[in-house]
Image (cartoon, rainbow, N blue to C red; front, top):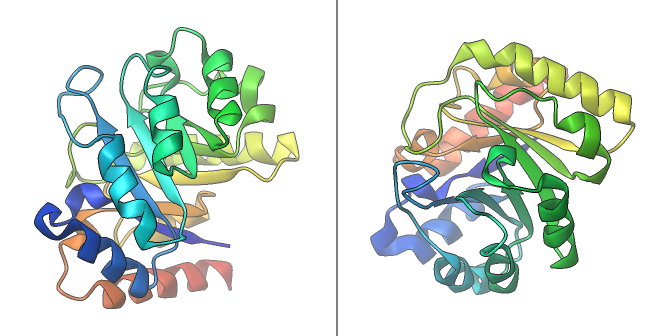
Length: 221
């Protein structure tokens, strides 16, 4: 099943609650929540209080992507704020296995995130503990960047690792996803798609999401 997870990084923060409600009514499956710390990435976004504020608006999963270093200190705060899934970058944690266990102990599903130039090798040791693998198709830090097609082989490699593991791990892609390329990304093996400006930058969210689903249906046919 293909899932679409709009990133609120591109939403209108003056009307954030309305934006979340509107995009879910338009057909989104998850809400993607980008957390940046002006340390691991050169930008500063939102924290647990914003997650806590939108949690009562929906029962849809909130997919929290931590672009922070260190990771462990902030995990419990996001779990208590209503995160459904928390993903982090392996290079941002001193002890990847320990961070995975911490997220799980806090009651959330766990994801690992790989930047375009970050190898997948750590999956050899922890894939059996994951619920999601997120491949970044841009360097993290800013919304609105163009998709980097050089990551498609990495998406295929991640899909092969998931198949070999025998586990039901979702494979998410984030960065420059839009109607014109979502089919190609799905053919590479992704099943979950983060889209920010492609959705929130359009006047009709439902129209964009429907067009994305049309492209995904062609891949599945």
